[in-house]
Image (cartoon, rainbow, N blue to C red; front, side):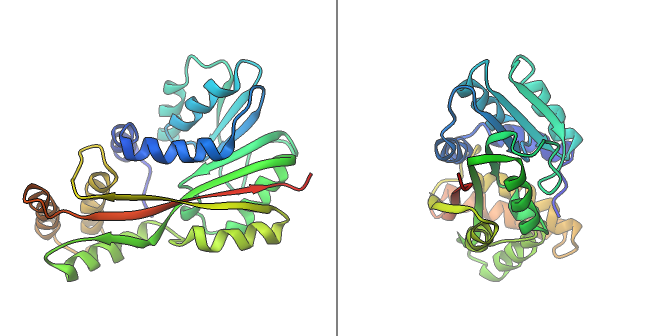
Length: 259
């Protein structure tokens, strides 16, 4: 599993300001349809970027409750939302939300469910806290959609297979809708948000993955530090020669509680 510690928090702070991540947040924001006076649970709020954006949309009479188990992430969220009187940042997990039953109009979770080992439990908790007719939005990658070019495909395959170990469920967009339906939700839509690039942007998703994957595979003992460095340097060289290619598809799942 990837540890959301101080180093990871710093990397994500920079990357999340970039165009790729802004687009991903916007997809969840639009699906959630925040309204003035909404009470919204941001499950796994991380460093609070989506929390802040939602707080602007709901006004002073609304409330966003950012929930995260990581002390470092909550600290970043608290700093980001310090001036927001309609935001509360609390400790909790997707399967143990510190909210009363039927207390939220809407709930959103962005790239959190892939780290959970109890998806039905998380769905049950979301159902518990939502009011009748409440909206639930989950955004996650489908890692089977990853395509990443390399002149050394075996090494790239090893990198990607090892990276899979940083999460629990790599196919959330495929497996979550049936779980939602079984729990009593109506699944309204499953929307693809594709990312594809022939450039290695400093603020892009691919570059962030390189920064995270390189030390991860070394810690796992799959590649030496030198081999992992060569892998990362190859991607830079491919970009410089106009041969870089990376793509992956993010999905936004929108569901509604029975009224």
